[in-house]
Image: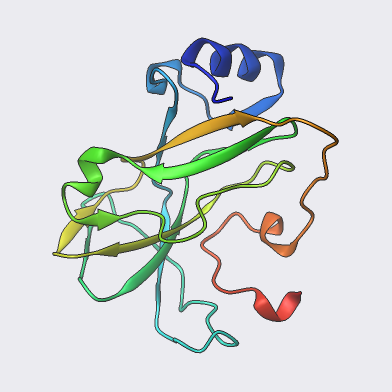
Length: 168
């Protein structure tokens, strides 16, 4: 079951969903709009064993022009998570209409710790991004049955993080 606006708000207030910083104005009927973080890295290697990303840089207030055919790693501005709900993360329709893909493959979260999520950004035409811009939406899904919490390496990072395959 997907949570409604009122239920997301109630669970944030109760502490069973973490969104920090939280802004009720970013609630939608069945989702929450998240913002782009402050840092970005352009991924230069296509080798899965080496794909950790290049230097992480700050996105300036004037914005940053993303180029087609490249993969950038950024992160959510908000710390997001739940020990009761599964989070799905996707781009906003208005961002998709600019030709910017926000999350290529890892859109389904795990029940467990809250952290800033790494975003996988790519575009089909040049597009400018800005720090803290509304870039995507989160949905929260209620789980059923006995819970098992994710404890893998990706929860240890709050900066854009590349492939952690070698840590498994």
